[in-house]
Image (cartoon, rainbow, N blue to C red; front, side, top):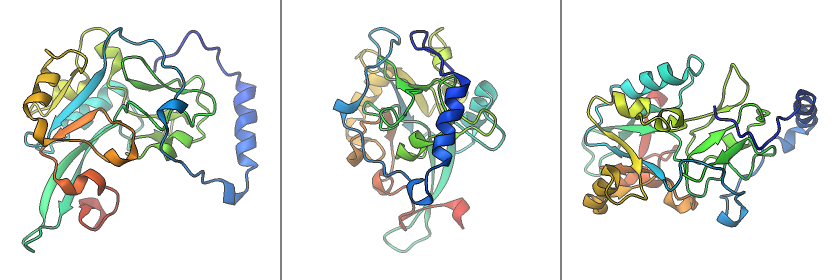
Length: 254
């Protein structure tokens, strides 16, 4: 993960002290109520790629659910076995005419929101956003408290079993910085994923969004996070109904 040289490392004793304090919390205080972050509460963004604002577009009409993106991401970023920065979940959607349920493949990942609720809740400023919109975690500072995991409305974060710190999709920023595509985009069999500079009207992602303006959707727009992962061909039931509503069910839940 990226580290910010302007910030000093949190001493190990400080980490232990912080975690010891967390362990001293009562059971009733272990679940922290998280509210959507307000843009005014966001700390200053850190340097990124100048002038750019990265976003991703996923065309569900082209996604075949092959999990090539999941495999390539795991090979590139090496999360622990059984934990994933991106994956393609299979959903079952009830049809209004009572016909057989429709099966939908939906790629999921960090949405690199413009107003990320995971950033201001971090007590040690380990989670941060760059000026190009990419949200990252400084593993040298992270104490693994899980506040950011609770704050994310997209279930896109997890505590890495090996490092005991927060982990998630980074848009493969280390590849973007040397002119390469993220592993998931490069390996997509159907060409369902696009990434690019939303500040550039001539970029492929900007042109594709413009050409499909009437069919562009994001997940949970009502949360006020301004997600920058966009979907084409996503059923309306998914916009606000991906977390347990009866109309949209994960196949693995059966």
